[in-house]
Length: 448
Image (cartoon, rainbow, N blue to C red; front, side):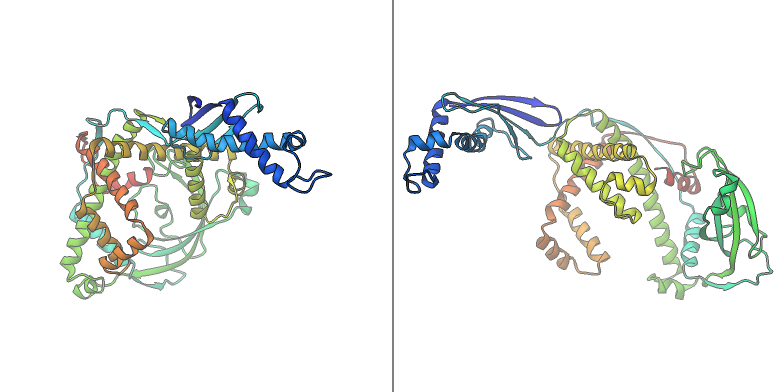
């Protein structure tokens, strides 16, 4: 009979202390010496024919090691079955000594599945933005689409830059470097349509009237609520050089143009563009409210997460970061060196994001479990049809691919988590805020 003591440690780690009775230890020793006797080479005896007493005397240390290794492996599985534990990592064994005459005592350290003690998740307050998409906003989006198909013609170099022109500009920031180093700083090249931005701090407001090859230093004052945090509230000086200037001619907005884009008519083009904008705004606003609620749920719950899970998520995030910036760094230190970052700070940010991601998923999964949420078949079908449309395949073809690569369960899990998100929103206390314009709403996008 095993004597088992279990101890719960931090980070979803379990320690088992197991005492194996001397009778089982003796049985294992006898088996070990039999195996050693069959291969033992002792002077005066043929292989496998040496007396067992002589084998025991000669190969005691080998037997100790073999018995210990055999016992910790076989007894460990008996112990976790008896205690109904489910390790998610291979155990690490430790023991001080082993003797044929004494019970064998060892410890096994391993991680178990993460747990979450869910806090309050219903009736949580959230502020929800209100934004009306106007006809002017829809027309601006229509014109933006027309710009993608616009024709351009290089403007005479003697003519000044005017609103509506497409300009290639070279820009470098010069207020944050020593004057002696400014010539060495590299320019960044941008292509912009002048006068399109309504932002008071837009750079093109400072270059109207300039000509090709003109250079100018401009100082831009960014508002405190500017969408790029590194520039918010700052006065920034730039060195600007004007490159090519082109006039821009938009295609005529008629039914023929609309049909080229896949619409039935101009009115259909405008109508569906408006539907798209309103749906986007609605989903973004609702998503922000859900995020507020979910943040409070995550912060109000308690978690026990294995370190291996955190490290695994950190590795996944690290690989995505590498890919997003086009760097092939082997580790965090190498990436930080290439990007001019502090390795410790970068690693801490990765860990923070990894833990937040894991906690969010665990909280939503627990809500799914508590509420008994199931997959909406209509929603699953909608997902399949959307995938089929994006990949120009039939839903039946996508179903075959899903069955072939075994991703149906993953899709269904995501849908259950989505259902949990809808539940916490529907059960939340949503407060509508003062309406803002679409332009004001658009400025908030870069901050989230």
